[in-house]
Length: 132
Image (cartoon, rainbow, N blue to C red):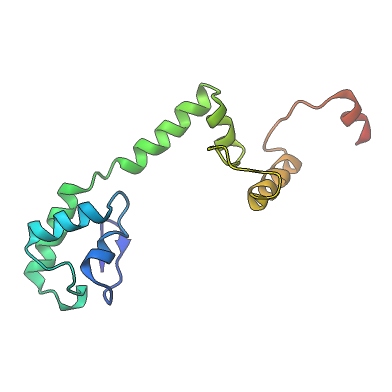
């Protein structure tokens, strides 16, 4: 079943399935269940057509579809301001103070290949330039 561009598992309960939507937590999912008038324990495959239509209508009203755009704009603003968190996002590194010496290996690999491909333009010292 597709609600707001997200495929929901019909074999799970309504409460668990609604939490798959971006921006919905347990509290909001319970609120939507009470507005529709359905028990949160009911599986999606057991709902009738009129209940599904009501569920989709209420989900469109309750969930802010611009939330994804808002978070992307916030990250772009941090990058434009050359904020520390913005540069961490730009290079694909952890932005909230996590350890990078032994963890975050995947993002370090992506960063390494991006530098080799010339996507990022780091300022190299004279010694580094001469090694190439």
